[in-house]
Length: 117
Image 1 (cartoon, helix red, strand yellow):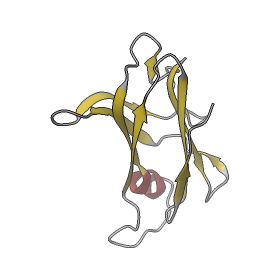
Image 2 (cartoon, helix red, strand yellow):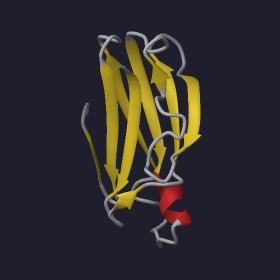
Image 3 (cartoon, one colour):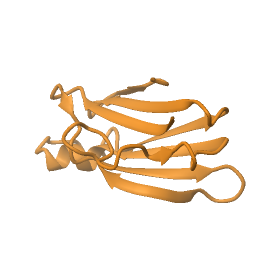
């Protein structure tokens, strides 16, 4: 149980190794940074869960994925301004006893997400 993410680079057909991701708690007051990380070779948090079952609480969160920086580091020529710079996903956790997996499929021009398992 807990919170996890996984990013797939649909332009190259690979995990988004090296992409920077930030996790924020949102809701009352300004967003609060909980964690910032760089994805591993599998496009996942190298430490496993973003939040474990004991830390995940009912409430709202935001994941911010540094899409343009990732593609620029891979040598992809992007227009200025970039079509996608950062992708921010705001989501809610209604039952912290369940596992919440928030994957991202991304290219320089599109993205998709869903609640995974």
